[in-house]
Length: 169
Ligand code: S3P
Image (tube, rainbow, N blue to C red; front, top):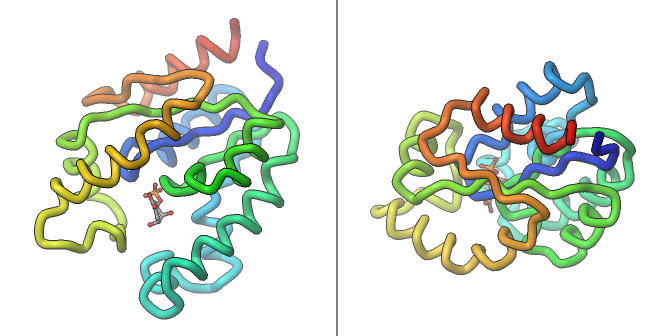
C-alpha cells in the first residue's frame, strides 16, 4: 500500500478534480485542491484573480499553497494544471508524494473544458490550437510523474480505479 501523498497532475480538463473526489471515497484520505484553497484565501474565483491581479500574482499564490500542502501526510493533492511548471512546486510535491499524470488528447481536453469552469488561459479564438501549444510546452514536465494514467475518453471512476490499483499494490 502506497503511503505517500497521491498527487494528481495534468492539463486543464483531464479530470483531476473529479478523480480526486472519487479517490477520497475509495481511499478515505483527505483531499486538497490548490485552486480551491487559492479561491478560498482570496475570496474570488481563479478567473477573477487572473483578470484583476494577473497570472504572475496567481502563480505566487500557487507556490505558497503548494508549500503548505506538499508536506502533509497521506493525503490527495489535486493540482491546478500549471502547478508543476514551477520547479520548486514539482520538487516539493515529489518529495512527499507519488505523482500521477492524467494524460488526455487535446480533443478530449477541449470537450471537458467546454462544459467546465472558465479557464483564463483558454479564452482565445481557437482554444484547440492553444491547447496543442501549451501541451507541447508542458508535456515533458507532466511526463516526470511517477505514473501516467491514460484518461482519454475514460469515465472518472475508470481513471480512479486505475490509480486505486496502483496505490493498493
Ligand atoms: C491552469 C489550470 C487551472 C487553474 C488556472 C491555470 C494552468 O486549473 O489553475 O486556470 O495553467 O493550466 P485546472 O487544471 O484545474 O483547470
